[in-house]
Image 1: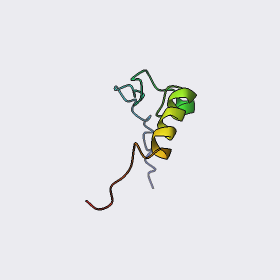
Image 2: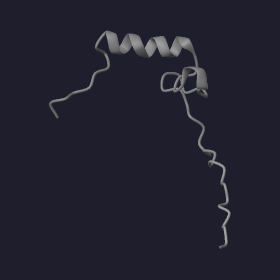
Image 3: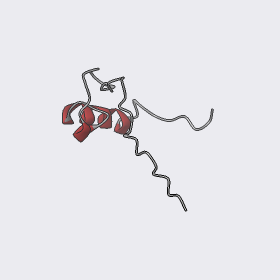
Image 4: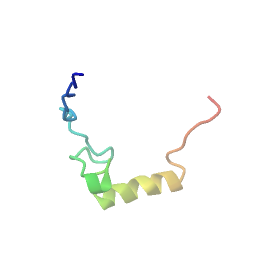
Length: 58
């Protein structure tokens, strides 16, 4: 009986660098998808103040 070895492939790296949706700087994994705690907090404040919302009626 012959055992075939499966070739292990590494995950492909994304050629596109993720950008922060607030300031468009390079995002950092710790705050992903944001670049910093400041941008993360700004986005949270937009959601809490109803500036951002999801319309479920459409």
